[in-house]
Image (tube, rainbow, N blue to C red; front, side):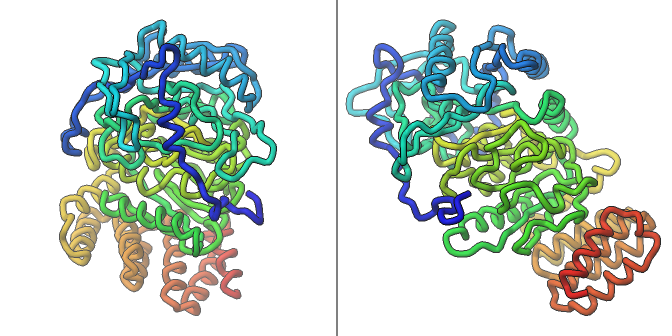
Length: 545
């Protein structure tokens, strides 16, 4: 990120609606390639209940010249039951980036020819007086289409290099390969700048929205190594089968001014989690979550604002729960994908995340993935690919979706899974929160506490404490954490409960009590080999010892 031009927030971005109209003729014969079947928009819940076999409308692209790319493509196609004829090998550079000419000749044009020769798209001429607008295409819909989702495998380049010299802001010609392919159907799409995404924040699933006409959902199965990518594929399917149950983590950066927009996305996401019955911990400090801070069972992580992984998520002991979705917002979070220890997306995947998002070049803050929109759509039952592009305002831009775009962790509804073993407490918490939705906060927490007492469940007490903290009821949170500590003898749980209680005491402006508690922890030999002890030491140091 440029120090004197962070996120280019003050620049004027020209969303080229006029260019979109100008260039909306389609490859050859100026026909419009329609990717969407003709559906009228119906109420939200009816659309979500309507069945869409996304895997049946998915094509996969691999690079035969990149070692392991074809094997990964075959593994994914087998797991998602994608026919072999939908798995396409296109030779392209083995490097991370390619020129615009290479993109056109090696990816875009061969894909268009393949789609046309296989009749995966049905073309219809646009009607006069019905131009493409921000609301969608007013020309006739195609009666059928066979591909709406495109998956790029590890080995396909992800960057298109800049060619223009000193371009004006909003007219940069570098881009993400994936974002360019979302508009594969456009005839000679504009190279300068991005295009407004007509599907952005539309309250309809992708195949049911007229605003998605002519677009593709593009996801990428890529990462530091083949083993990581295979795990991403398998973990997504596992989470769909068993349920994605655990905790969410929001890492604020306390930004102000123009950056307040990003803070708002994070706070709105936390509210969505609360309403969905997903316990959430919010870190309210300016710095990222401190090193070694315990974050068990993390299934959802969203935060900002550093250029590389650091703090709690970088700690050796930290690992995401299987099927987790994680994103740290930064200008160049995906400038490097195939490394375990550089930028953000590679390290997050190495730490066990199944899905992450990022920017391959510096974007504008307002044109990155809107966390709140993404989380809202995900919890409504959208696939990861649908939710991600529904939450991204621009196409032909810098954004990349890393993970299985077909992954749909909440496709059967929030609270649909009962959980087993340690997951049962999360399922019970979620079920109680959903059943008592609309009741007072006090009533919900009383019910949760009574349930915890009945089950003798330390985890339920802790999760209820997180709810109190989220609602700024710090004395309640402190009491519940203390009570939870009395109910367990597990050392790992005890040190975490003490740390969280110290944090709530600090927030409650009782710093002396927090310091006393931290000192007591450090004196106790039972904790001397616990990874979280480093977080106790760091917190005490930050508080002046």
